[in-house]
Length: 131
Image (cartoon, rainbow, N blue to C red; front, side, top):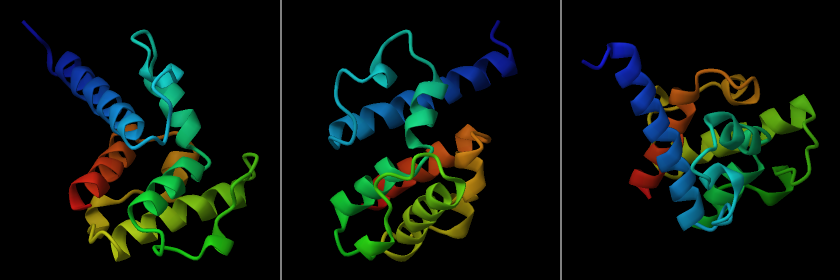
C-alpha cells in the first residue's frame, strides 16, 4: 500500500522531471544535462534555475518583448540582488504577458533559497500552459 508521503514524493518527482523535460524541449537546457539523467535529483535542476537566467531565457523564447533586456543580468554570479531581480522579471512576465494569476506564482526568495520546490515548478509549468 502506498503511503500519502510516498505518493506525494512521487508527484513531486514527476513534477520536477516534467519541468526538466520541458526545458529541454524548449532548448533551454541541453538533452545531456545532468538534470535529465535518470539518477539525478531535484536539487540539480533547482540549482541551475536559482539565478533566474534560464527562466528569463525561457520567457524571452516565448515573447522577446516581455521585459526590457537591460534589466536582465546574464551573469549574476549568485549575487542575491541580481538573482532576485532576474526571478522577478520572470514572474512579472508570467503575470503580465502570459496571464498567470498571483496564486500560480511564487515568491522570488523561494527559488533563490531553494525552498518550496513544488510551488515554483508549478509556476514554470503554468507558463507553458498559458503560452
